[in-house]
Image 1 (cartoon, helix red, strand yellow):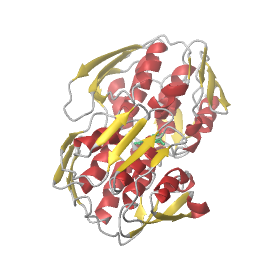
Image 2 (spheres, helix red, strand yellow):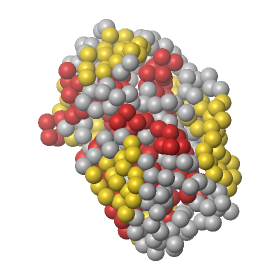
Image 3 (cartoon, protein in one colour):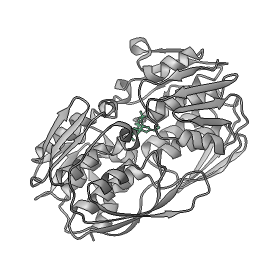
Length: 432
Ligand code: SPQ
């Protein structure tokens, strides 16, 4: 339980059991957005009831979309591609980078004015990476620091298609342009330096859009008719990652996680943990909504440090803080490179995980584009750590706390609700 925004984690002797993690955050966001632009009703099952995805629901409700929430199911009554209405107030995305960047692509195609903002973290994160291409497509966008920072004012309309080379591998940039491409006459193309997660491409096709994928290039044809669909959201592999590392490092553990999304653009964590020597098995299931899924089984493992970077990074970008925890418990050195993008997430995650783990006695240092961890030192508890209001940092530190010599306290732990409501209860269930 989080009391006064503080999470207390006690060391555990073993984690055992079969669990499910909440629905995939990236897929939940996209399902609401495309459901809103579709004709007819979209039924989303297994929706992530986390703060970020609820922000997306609220933003589209502000634009006239009816959405009914019942436990983890959401019904979205689509307005059609041109059916959104001008919001009466500022659209507030809370802490969600996915909401502001993807929704900006949709807002760029609307013939009304919208203002979009978020919390103090969102207002620091770079937006020029999406406002630049959207302006090239014909939208008028104003923001602080020449359009680099939110709040953003977006005045859109009919757009022209572009071919755009993204400066970094980012599903948020790619998706923002593809969503704007729905409102452009002709084919809009995005070319990435490395492949980022492809949930938007898959879901756009599933709703009826024409999407072509050619290596690192993705193209979308404007003005499709999107049709409301049924979507079963798989468990979020980025949430499962905390349990995978916990199961691998806590002695006498065996954890089964059911129905986790196994999209190959997201499974870098599995590749890395296996290379580190984790006892990790995958049982693939069938899926019929365009996203592969399966069960993951992890057992206590003897881990070894490894070096990685390059194309692997976009496939595990959100898992790097918890991989650092696995590395702290591994023999030898782990070096993670090409991950400078971590500096512009909800916090500077390179700095935040270093500060937290250093306080726990871990030999970890910041590199300009990553981390270097010398594993094998005992993890020290009895400390109070700051999540820096970042859900992934809070949970990564909590996992480290499971193998510390004493309990730890994590400040600003309410951030966990952004992506993994029920995280602490799930850990307690596995430990009982
Ligand atoms: O939505 P937000 O705040 O950007 O969330 C994060 C996260 O850790 O949950 C990043 F901070 O995930 C991003 C991810 O890093 C979600 C995402 C998506 O759904 O498209 C893509 C990744 O970001 P990017 O910038 O690499 O495209």
